[in-house]
Amino acid sequence: MSPIALPSQHAAVLHGAKDLRYEDRTLWPPQQGHVQVAVLATGLCGSDRKSPITLTYAHQSSDRTLAVHYYMHGRNGDFALQAPLVLGHESAGIVTAVGPGVKNFVTGQRVAIEAGIMCRDCSYCKKGRYNLCKNMRFASSAKTFPHLDGTLQDRMNHPAHVLHPLPDNCSFEQAALAEPLSVLLHASRRASFTSSSAPSTVLVFGVGAIGLLACALAKSYGATRVVAIDINQARLNFAKEQGFAEQVYCLSMTDRAKTTEDQLKRARENVGAALSAFGEPDGFDLVFECTGAEPCIQMSIHAAITGGKVMLVGMGSRNVTLPLSAAALREVDIQGSFRYANTYPEALALLASGKLPNIEKIITHRFGLEESKRAFELLAKGRDEDGRMVIKVMIGPSDGQLF
Image (cartoon, rainbow, N blue to C red; front, top):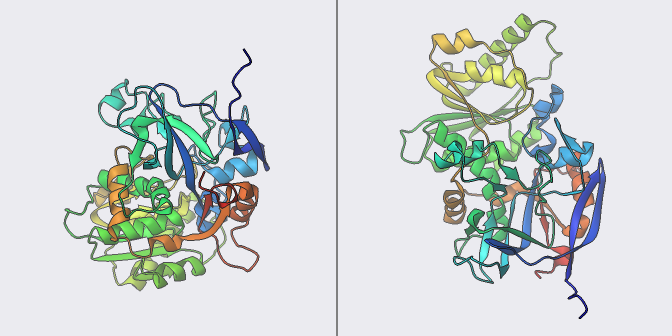
Protein backbone atom coordinates (compact mmCIF):
# COMPACT_ATOMS: atom_id res chain seq x y z
CA MET A 1 0.00 0.00 0.00
CA SER A 2 1.42 3.35 -1.00
CA PRO A 3 1.76 6.00 1.73
CA ILE A 4 -0.98 8.62 2.01
CA ALA A 5 0.12 11.94 0.57
CA LEU A 6 -0.24 14.74 3.09
CA PRO A 7 -1.42 18.17 1.95
CA SER A 8 0.98 21.10 1.84
CA GLN A 9 0.73 24.71 2.91
CA HIS A 10 2.74 27.93 2.72
CA ALA A 11 4.87 29.52 5.43
CA ALA A 12 7.23 32.49 5.79
CA VAL A 13 10.38 30.83 7.11
CA LEU A 14 13.42 32.67 8.45
CA HIS A 15 16.73 30.95 7.64
CA GLY A 16 19.06 33.75 8.78
CA ALA A 17 19.46 37.50 8.85
CA LYS A 18 17.21 38.99 6.12
CA ASP A 19 16.78 35.50 4.67
CA LEU A 20 13.00 35.03 4.82
CA ARG A 21 11.62 32.48 2.37
CA TYR A 22 8.05 31.76 1.26
CA GLU A 23 8.05 27.97 1.29
CA ASP A 24 5.82 24.95 0.85
CA ARG A 25 5.59 22.82 3.98
CA THR A 26 3.77 19.63 4.88
CA LEU A 27 0.47 20.21 6.66
CA TRP A 28 0.31 17.68 9.47
CA PRO A 29 -2.97 16.77 11.18
CA PRO A 30 -3.38 18.02 14.77
CA GLN A 31 -2.15 15.66 17.46
CA GLN A 32 -3.72 14.84 20.83
CA GLY A 33 -5.07 17.95 22.53
CA HIS A 34 -4.24 20.21 19.58
CA VAL A 35 -6.35 22.21 17.16
CA GLN A 36 -5.53 23.21 13.59
CA VAL A 37 -6.15 26.88 12.82
CA ALA A 38 -6.24 28.68 9.47
CA VAL A 39 -4.33 31.87 10.36
CA LEU A 40 -6.22 34.87 8.99
CA ALA A 41 -4.46 37.79 10.68
CA THR A 42 -1.01 38.24 12.18
CA GLY A 43 0.13 41.59 13.52
CA LEU A 44 3.68 42.90 13.37
CA CYS A 45 4.52 45.99 15.39
CA GLY A 46 6.45 48.93 14.00
CA SER A 47 7.64 49.34 17.58
CA ASP A 48 9.18 45.87 17.31
CA ARG A 49 12.05 47.56 15.48
CA LYS A 50 12.33 49.57 18.72
CA SER A 51 10.79 52.92 19.42
CA PRO A 52 12.50 56.04 18.07
CA ILE A 53 13.63 56.84 21.60
CA THR A 54 15.30 53.47 22.04
CA LEU A 55 16.98 53.70 18.65
CA THR A 56 18.35 57.13 19.48
CA TYR A 57 20.08 55.82 22.57
CA ALA A 58 21.30 52.68 20.76
CA HIS A 59 20.18 50.14 23.35
CA GLN A 60 20.37 46.39 22.98
CA SER A 61 17.26 44.27 22.56
CA SER A 62 15.87 42.08 25.32
CA ASP A 63 14.61 38.50 25.33
CA ARG A 64 11.09 39.56 24.40
CA THR A 65 10.10 38.12 21.03
CA LEU A 66 10.86 40.88 18.53
CA ALA A 67 10.00 39.67 15.03
CA VAL A 68 11.81 42.43 13.18
CA HIS A 69 14.96 41.98 15.25
CA TYR A 70 15.00 38.29 14.32
CA TYR A 71 14.51 39.23 10.68
CA MET A 72 17.25 41.85 10.62
CA HIS A 73 19.89 39.99 12.64
CA GLY A 74 18.89 36.31 12.77
CA ARG A 75 18.82 36.62 16.54
CA ASN A 76 17.23 38.52 19.39
CA GLY A 77 19.75 39.33 22.09
CA ASP A 78 21.30 36.04 23.25
CA PHE A 79 18.83 33.91 21.31
CA ALA A 80 20.14 33.07 17.86
CA LEU A 81 18.47 30.94 15.20
CA GLN A 82 19.69 27.35 15.31
CA ALA A 83 17.27 26.14 12.65
CA PRO A 84 14.75 27.67 10.22
CA LEU A 85 11.94 29.39 12.13
CA VAL A 86 8.45 30.60 11.22
CA LEU A 87 7.93 34.05 12.76
CA GLY A 88 4.72 35.69 14.03
CA HIS A 89 2.88 35.54 17.36
CA GLU A 90 -0.03 38.05 17.31
CA SER A 91 -2.72 36.09 15.51
CA ALA A 92 -6.28 34.90 15.04
CA GLY A 93 -8.03 32.54 12.66
CA ILE A 94 -10.60 29.79 12.09
CA VAL A 95 -10.49 26.22 13.38
CA THR A 96 -10.09 23.80 10.45
CA ALA A 97 -9.46 20.52 12.29
CA VAL A 98 -9.65 19.21 15.85
CA GLY A 99 -7.27 16.64 17.30
CA PRO A 100 -8.13 13.70 19.55
CA GLY A 101 -9.28 14.61 23.04
CA VAL A 102 -10.38 18.16 22.18
CA LYS A 103 -13.99 18.76 23.16
CA ASN A 104 -14.35 22.54 23.46
CA PHE A 105 -13.62 23.56 19.85
CA VAL A 106 -15.31 22.74 16.53
CA THR A 107 -14.38 23.37 12.92
CA GLY A 108 -15.40 26.79 11.69
CA GLN A 109 -14.98 28.38 15.12
CA ARG A 110 -13.16 31.73 15.26
CA VAL A 111 -10.26 31.85 17.73
CA ALA A 112 -7.34 33.96 18.92
CA ILE A 113 -3.99 32.20 19.27
CA GLU A 114 -2.06 32.72 22.51
CA ALA A 115 1.51 32.02 21.40
CA GLY A 116 3.06 30.83 24.68
CA ILE A 117 2.78 27.19 25.73
CA MET A 118 3.32 26.84 29.47
CA CYS A 119 4.23 23.59 31.23
CA ARG A 120 1.17 23.78 33.58
CA ASP A 121 3.14 21.85 36.20
CA CYS A 122 5.72 24.20 37.76
CA SER A 123 5.10 26.38 40.82
CA TYR A 124 4.60 29.49 38.69
CA CYS A 125 1.99 27.83 36.50
CA LYS A 126 0.16 26.48 39.52
CA LYS A 127 0.07 29.98 41.03
CA GLY A 128 -1.39 31.39 37.82
CA ARG A 129 1.82 33.21 36.87
CA TYR A 130 2.57 31.10 33.84
CA ASN A 131 4.28 34.00 32.07
CA LEU A 132 7.22 33.23 34.40
CA CYS A 133 7.23 29.49 33.59
CA LYS A 134 10.84 28.42 33.07
CA ASN A 135 9.69 25.73 30.64
CA MET A 136 7.63 28.13 28.54
CA ARG A 137 7.84 27.57 24.78
CA PHE A 138 6.89 30.66 22.83
CA ALA A 139 5.95 30.48 19.16
CA SER A 140 8.41 32.39 16.94
CA SER A 141 11.11 32.59 19.65
CA ALA A 142 14.57 31.01 19.35
CA LYS A 143 14.95 30.90 23.13
CA THR A 144 14.13 27.18 23.23
CA PHE A 145 15.35 24.44 20.89
CA PRO A 146 13.86 22.83 18.90
CA HIS A 147 12.25 26.15 18.05
CA LEU A 148 8.46 26.47 18.06
CA ASP A 149 7.18 27.83 14.75
CA GLY A 150 5.06 30.96 14.81
CA THR A 151 1.93 32.00 13.00
CA LEU A 152 3.15 33.21 9.60
CA GLN A 153 1.82 30.13 7.87
CA ASP A 154 -1.47 29.21 6.22
CA ARG A 155 -2.38 26.86 9.06
CA MET A 156 -0.81 25.89 12.36
CA ASN A 157 -1.45 23.24 14.97
CA HIS A 158 -1.61 24.61 18.51
CA PRO A 159 -2.67 23.29 21.95
CA ALA A 160 -6.37 23.81 22.61
CA HIS A 161 -5.78 25.23 26.09
CA VAL A 162 -4.11 28.34 24.65
CA LEU A 163 -6.77 29.11 22.06
CA HIS A 164 -9.55 31.56 22.86
CA PRO A 165 -13.00 31.90 21.22
CA LEU A 166 -13.71 35.28 19.68
CA PRO A 167 -16.73 37.37 20.66
CA ASP A 168 -19.19 37.64 17.77
CA ASN A 169 -18.36 41.30 17.09
CA CYS A 170 -14.58 40.93 17.29
CA SER A 171 -12.82 40.88 13.90
CA PHE A 172 -9.73 38.80 13.15
CA GLU A 173 -7.57 41.92 12.99
CA GLN A 174 -8.91 43.13 16.32
CA ALA A 175 -8.24 39.70 17.79
CA ALA A 176 -4.64 39.86 16.58
CA LEU A 177 -4.30 42.97 18.76
CA ALA A 178 -5.19 40.90 21.84
CA GLU A 179 -1.55 39.86 22.22
CA PRO A 180 0.00 43.33 22.55
CA LEU A 181 -3.06 44.53 24.49
CA SER A 182 -2.48 41.64 26.90
CA VAL A 183 0.96 43.06 27.65
CA LEU A 184 -0.71 46.25 28.90
CA LEU A 185 -3.49 44.43 30.73
CA HIS A 186 -0.91 42.42 32.66
CA ALA A 187 1.12 45.54 33.46
CA SER A 188 -2.02 47.36 34.60
CA ARG A 189 -3.01 44.51 36.89
CA ARG A 190 0.42 44.55 38.47
CA ALA A 191 -0.03 48.27 39.10
CA SER A 192 -3.50 47.61 40.60
CA PHE A 193 -4.89 49.84 37.85
CA THR A 194 -8.19 48.45 36.58
CA SER A 195 -11.60 49.65 35.48
CA SER A 196 -12.76 49.50 39.11
CA SER A 197 -9.79 51.34 40.63
CA ALA A 198 -9.83 54.98 41.69
CA PRO A 199 -9.44 57.49 38.83
CA SER A 200 -5.81 58.19 38.01
CA THR A 201 -3.68 60.46 35.86
CA VAL A 202 -1.49 58.53 33.43
CA LEU A 203 1.71 59.39 31.55
CA VAL A 204 3.01 57.15 28.77
CA PHE A 205 6.61 57.22 27.52
CA GLY A 206 6.78 56.13 23.88
CA VAL A 207 3.92 56.06 21.37
CA GLY A 208 4.69 53.02 19.28
CA ALA A 209 1.97 50.37 19.13
CA ILE A 210 2.46 49.34 22.77
CA GLY A 211 2.42 52.95 23.99
CA LEU A 212 -0.73 53.73 22.02
CA LEU A 213 -2.41 50.66 23.50
CA ALA A 214 -1.34 51.84 26.96
CA CYS A 215 -3.06 55.16 26.30
CA ALA A 216 -6.20 53.48 24.97
CA LEU A 217 -6.41 51.09 27.91
CA ALA A 218 -5.90 53.90 30.44
CA LYS A 219 -8.74 55.90 28.88
CA SER A 220 -11.04 52.86 28.87
CA TYR A 221 -10.33 52.40 32.58
CA GLY A 222 -11.48 55.93 33.31
CA ALA A 223 -8.16 57.73 33.75
CA THR A 224 -8.86 61.41 34.37
CA ARG A 225 -5.96 62.43 32.16
CA VAL A 226 -3.74 60.57 29.65
CA VAL A 227 -0.66 62.24 28.15
CA ALA A 228 2.34 60.96 26.20
CA ILE A 229 6.02 61.72 25.62
CA ASP A 230 8.22 60.72 22.66
CA ILE A 231 10.94 62.19 20.47
CA ASN A 232 8.96 61.61 17.25
CA GLN A 233 6.56 64.51 16.62
CA ALA A 234 4.71 62.66 13.86
CA ARG A 235 3.85 59.79 16.20
CA LEU A 236 2.83 62.24 18.90
CA ASN A 237 0.59 64.05 16.44
CA PHE A 238 -1.02 60.74 15.52
CA ALA A 239 -1.58 59.90 19.20
CA LYS A 240 -3.30 63.21 19.82
CA GLU A 241 -5.29 63.41 16.57
CA GLN A 242 -6.70 59.90 17.02
CA GLY A 243 -7.66 60.54 20.63
CA PHE A 244 -5.17 58.23 22.32
CA ALA A 245 -3.63 61.08 24.37
CA GLU A 246 -5.14 64.46 25.19
CA GLN A 247 -1.76 66.20 25.36
CA VAL A 248 1.70 65.27 24.10
CA TYR A 249 5.25 66.46 24.60
CA CYS A 250 8.20 66.03 22.24
CA LEU A 251 11.57 65.59 23.92
CA SER A 252 14.35 67.62 22.38
CA MET A 253 17.26 65.80 20.80
CA THR A 254 20.47 66.38 22.75
CA ASP A 255 23.94 64.90 22.81
CA ARG A 256 24.44 61.97 25.15
CA ALA A 257 25.65 62.92 28.62
CA LYS A 258 29.30 62.09 29.24
CA THR A 259 28.91 60.98 32.87
CA THR A 260 26.26 59.12 34.84
CA GLU A 261 25.77 62.15 37.06
CA ASP A 262 25.18 64.35 34.04
CA GLN A 263 22.76 61.83 32.58
CA LEU A 264 20.67 61.66 35.77
CA LYS A 265 20.67 65.44 36.06
CA ARG A 266 19.57 65.82 32.44
CA ALA A 267 16.79 63.26 32.90
CA ARG A 268 15.43 65.20 35.88
CA GLU A 269 15.61 68.50 34.00
CA ASN A 270 14.02 67.12 30.82
CA VAL A 271 11.07 65.54 32.58
CA GLY A 272 10.67 68.65 34.71
CA ALA A 273 10.15 70.66 31.54
CA ALA A 274 7.61 68.10 30.31
CA LEU A 275 5.67 68.11 33.58
CA SER A 276 5.61 71.90 33.49
CA ALA A 277 4.22 71.83 29.94
CA PHE A 278 1.54 69.36 31.06
CA GLY A 279 0.65 71.57 34.02
CA GLU A 280 1.40 68.68 36.39
CA PRO A 281 4.53 69.77 38.30
CA ASP A 282 3.97 67.14 40.99
CA GLY A 283 3.82 64.29 38.45
CA PHE A 284 1.36 61.58 37.46
CA ASP A 285 -0.27 58.79 39.46
CA LEU A 286 0.85 56.09 37.03
CA VAL A 287 3.65 56.10 34.46
CA PHE A 288 3.87 53.47 31.71
CA GLU A 289 7.46 53.32 30.45
CA CYS A 290 7.11 51.73 27.00
CA THR A 291 10.47 52.51 25.38
CA GLY A 292 13.10 50.56 27.30
CA ALA A 293 15.47 53.52 26.82
CA GLU A 294 17.60 54.26 29.87
CA PRO A 295 16.99 58.06 29.91
CA CYS A 296 13.23 57.49 29.74
CA ILE A 297 13.33 54.99 32.58
CA GLN A 298 15.24 57.57 34.61
CA MET A 299 12.74 60.27 33.68
CA SER A 300 9.79 58.05 34.55
CA ILE A 301 10.79 57.94 38.22
CA HIS A 302 10.79 61.72 38.42
CA ALA A 303 7.54 61.83 36.42
CA ALA A 304 5.61 59.83 39.01
CA ILE A 305 3.83 61.67 41.77
CA THR A 306 4.85 61.07 45.39
CA GLY A 307 3.37 57.68 46.23
CA GLY A 308 2.85 56.93 42.53
CA LYS A 309 3.85 53.98 40.38
CA VAL A 310 6.13 53.32 37.42
CA MET A 311 5.42 50.29 35.24
CA LEU A 312 8.39 49.12 33.19
CA VAL A 313 6.82 47.74 30.02
CA GLY A 314 9.48 48.52 27.41
CA MET A 315 12.61 46.39 27.29
CA GLY A 316 15.93 47.82 26.18
CA SER A 317 19.24 48.06 27.98
CA ARG A 318 19.96 45.18 30.35
CA ASN A 319 21.68 47.36 32.95
CA VAL A 320 20.23 50.74 33.85
CA THR A 321 21.41 53.40 36.30
CA LEU A 322 18.42 54.61 38.30
CA PRO A 323 17.80 57.54 40.68
CA LEU A 324 16.70 55.15 43.41
CA SER A 325 16.94 57.70 46.20
CA ALA A 326 14.39 59.85 44.35
CA ALA A 327 12.08 56.84 44.21
CA ALA A 328 12.64 55.69 47.78
CA LEU A 329 12.25 59.11 49.44
CA ARG A 330 8.94 59.70 47.61
CA GLU A 331 7.74 56.08 47.86
CA VAL A 332 7.49 55.66 44.10
CA ASP A 333 6.90 51.99 43.31
CA ILE A 334 8.90 50.63 40.35
CA GLN A 335 7.46 47.41 38.94
CA GLY A 336 8.54 45.17 36.11
CA SER A 337 6.16 43.39 33.78
CA PHE A 338 6.86 40.45 31.46
CA ARG A 339 4.42 39.28 28.80
CA TYR A 340 1.04 38.33 30.33
CA ALA A 341 -0.98 35.62 32.03
CA ASN A 342 -4.73 34.95 31.97
CA THR A 343 -5.43 38.12 30.01
CA TYR A 344 -6.80 36.97 26.65
CA PRO A 345 -10.51 36.71 27.57
CA GLU A 346 -10.49 40.26 28.97
CA ALA A 347 -8.47 41.57 26.04
CA LEU A 348 -10.86 40.09 23.48
CA ALA A 349 -13.92 41.33 25.36
CA LEU A 350 -12.43 44.81 25.55
CA LEU A 351 -11.56 44.84 21.84
CA ALA A 352 -15.12 43.81 20.99
CA SER A 353 -16.73 46.29 23.38
CA GLY A 354 -16.05 49.48 21.45
CA LYS A 355 -14.36 50.97 24.52
CA LEU A 356 -11.08 51.43 22.62
CA PRO A 357 -12.02 54.07 19.99
CA ASN A 358 -9.88 54.19 16.84
CA ILE A 359 -7.87 51.18 17.97
CA GLU A 360 -7.77 49.80 14.41
CA LYS A 361 -6.09 53.02 13.28
CA ILE A 362 -2.79 51.70 14.65
CA ILE A 363 -2.87 49.17 11.78
CA THR A 364 -1.18 51.24 9.10
CA HIS A 365 -0.25 48.63 6.45
CA ARG A 366 -1.52 45.25 5.24
CA PHE A 367 0.15 42.45 3.25
CA GLY A 368 -0.54 38.89 2.16
CA LEU A 369 1.54 36.05 3.60
CA GLU A 370 3.50 35.76 0.36
CA GLU A 371 4.61 39.39 0.86
CA SER A 372 6.04 38.80 4.34
CA LYS A 373 9.60 39.68 3.34
CA ARG A 374 8.42 43.00 1.94
CA ALA A 375 6.47 43.62 5.15
CA PHE A 376 9.56 43.08 7.31
CA GLU A 377 11.65 45.35 5.10
CA LEU A 378 9.00 48.05 5.49
CA LEU A 379 9.04 47.65 9.27
CA ALA A 380 12.81 47.93 9.31
CA LYS A 381 12.62 51.24 7.45
CA GLY A 382 9.83 52.63 9.60
CA ARG A 383 8.24 54.55 6.70
CA ASP A 384 6.78 53.47 3.40
CA GLU A 385 7.64 54.78 -0.06
CA ASP A 386 5.11 57.58 0.36
CA GLY A 387 6.68 58.70 3.62
CA ARG A 388 3.86 57.40 5.82
CA MET A 389 4.98 56.11 9.21
CA VAL A 390 4.62 52.43 10.03
CA ILE A 391 3.05 51.55 13.37
CA LYS A 392 1.62 48.08 12.90
CA VAL A 393 1.55 45.83 9.84
CA MET A 394 -1.11 43.15 9.52
CA ILE A 395 -0.34 40.05 7.47
CA GLY A 396 -3.24 38.09 6.05
CA PRO A 397 -3.64 34.76 4.21
CA SER A 398 -1.75 33.82 1.05
CA ASP A 399 -3.19 35.58 -1.99
CA GLY A 400 -6.07 36.88 0.12
CA GLN A 401 -7.63 33.40 0.44
CA LEU A 402 -9.32 32.30 3.67
CA PHE A 403 -8.52 28.62 3.13
